[in-house]
Length: 101
Image (cartoon, rainbow, N blue to C red; front, side, top):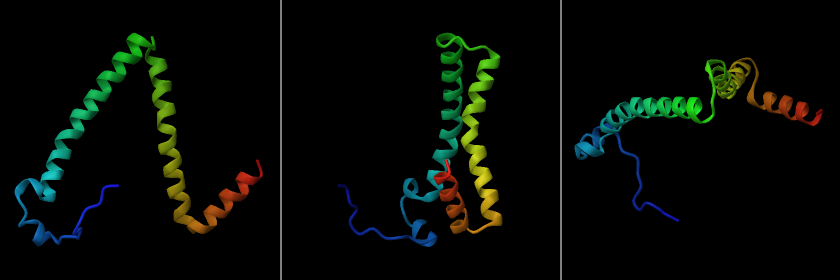
């Protein structure tokens, strides 16, 4: 197991004294550059594979994306439910509905 010795939280003032490549702003810059690159690579690979290897047409790609988005919509639904009821109540309702199956 890997452990870090002398692990502590730095304040923003202390982080400014670090070398530039270790500052939090540099992580933000790297992530801002990596996100479009990763997304465009994903889109290119998905479209090439789905069209050439799997033989999907536009409708098939639409269904693929629809199924891929379902967990996100369910997560938003749970967030809306948590706005109206406590998490413990939601957990109890979930447990009871799971047992009724």
